[in-house]
Image (cartoon, rainbow, N blue to C red; front, side, top):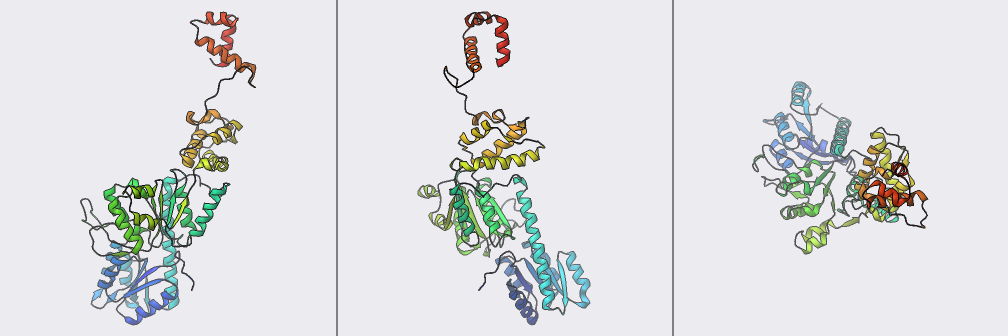
Length: 451
């Protein structure tokens, strides 16, 4: 049996008091490999929305003694992204238009054909996909910059990239480990992009960036009044990436109280919003990243052992930049190309000395530090090539003093000797006498050497 593609599969709620219409819609939509729940009244519909999330709801405007129009704002309050299509008879198109004013996306009139239903559903699916793309762009707008390459020249990097590609289509939890700045988030986004969930949302939660007492609410949401300041319902990041991927950055900093609830979510795909007692379901793929030694944190009692084993299904360790030297110059050229254009510069490349400096530095901040270094150099450079002087002092090795017999120009020895004599004399005349030259000659030498 072919596995449905998460990118095109929708979760659909049908609310209609006519059993035949429920059956017809369910059969038609299930044949398109969508997940379908059908109920006969608003009360059951609300109960279903408290247990799971829906991309699309077909709602009949006449539900016995109840009005389907009143259900629309309730559905939208719980999940604003749900698209509602109202079902109406020819004589009540005016009511359908009113329902759209209240938030419905579209309407379909009775009697309808399976082709009309399929066409409507595909249109809604396209809208949801476009909304997901827009949300991803908004999520990434503060990360705008050069795309970090995964087509590495390093054999070790090539192996883990291949592992990530193989793991991406699966539903397995992936744990990314490595030092800060190595590109774990780049891998997480690539895995999502390579997966069957690529057209669905990817939510990113940085555990250190959210206060521990708010992390549970950020992940799972809260009901209005759940705590001081909770003035409205908040769906949470899990709900926002339904059908997609949840990326937890620096999960080693997750508070112990949240770890237990997150473990339950990984195991059962169930959770509860703060202030609610009703369990909810979510179909979300988990990717986690950390720069910490989780085994050490487990031994110290700061990280749950059972959560560690649930996360460590497929572990990928991203190597530090110092262990993939063959990538330093290609990455530098990528960053140069981006920042050259962003800053309207015409820099052609790096001098040989600049490349040697880049290759000789250990890069404790990894790719992130390299990126920042190249950006700074592009901004400060005034030549056609980035040179030693364009780099910050901390990455430039201190120049060793030339010695007699070194393979250096005679002027370098002369400059060093003049500097040392000047540093150990009280006046220019005394220095000139020691050097065996007059003051005018010493002045010209100082000017030439910038002393």
